[in-house]
Amino acid sequence: MFCGACDIGTSCARAICGATDSRFSSAISTPDAVARAAPIAEAINRLGFPNYYGEQRFGREKETLRIGLELLQGKVGPESIAPARRRFLLRMSLSAVQSALFNVVLAERLRDSLFSTVSAGRRDAGGGEWGQFVAIDAAAEQQRFDSRQILLTGPIFGPRMTAPQHEPAAREGRVLSAWGCLPSTYAVCQTDERHAAAAGRLPDALRVENESDGLRFDVRLPAASMQPPLLREFLKTPAGDLP
Image (cartoon, rainbow, N blue to C red):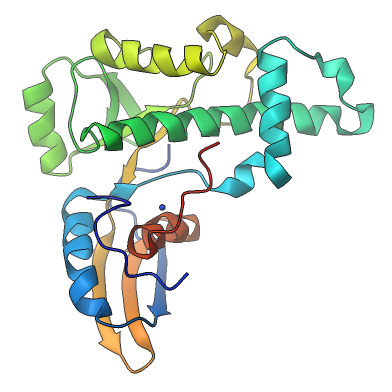
C-alpha cells in the first residue's frame, strides 16, 4: 500500500493526531494523475502515512550518522571530534542513529503489513500528548486506534524509551543487533529527542484535485516537516533516509 502502490511521480515521535497547525497545497503534473492518486489518498486518509525521518538528519553523505554509529559501537570516542564541534556533533550524531533506527523499524513494519496493526507488547501513545503505554490487549487497542483515539509509535532508542515486550521487543532487538548496537549503549544518548515518535501521521482533510497545472494536494498537517513524507507516498521517490 505505502511506497509501492501507484507510481504517479515525475521525478517515501511526533505529535498526537488531529493537530492542524500547517496547511499547504502542492501541484504535480503527470498524465492520469488523479485516477492513479485516488487509491493512495483514500488509504492515507484511512490509515495515515509513514512518518520517516528525512535524509537531512544524517548529514552530507550520511557523515553524521557514521560518526554516531562509530561512537555507539566503541570504535571512536568523543575526543576524536574537534573540541569546537564536539558538544554539537555528539548530540546530532547520536540523534542521527536514533532516527535511522526508527526508520528501519518502521520500514520493517511496512514490509510485514504491520503499519496500522496494534501488537501486544508494543509501545503506543494516547490520552494527553505523549501519554505512552505498552499495549496488553491488542484487540481493544486496535479498536481505539481505528477510531483515532491512540497513536502507534516507533522507537527512539535511549534511556527514556519505554521498553516494548514480546514480539515487538524481539523485532527491535534484531534491528539493534544488525546495526551493531546494544540497548546498554544507549545510556549515552542524552539527546533532546522524545522517547518515541509517531510511526504514522493521519492527515486532516487530504484532498487531491486535478487543475490546469497538474495534480493538486490540499491538506492540513501538524507541521510543515510532514509534507515530504506525505508527498513521497504519491511520488514514490526512494526514501533516501534508510541507510
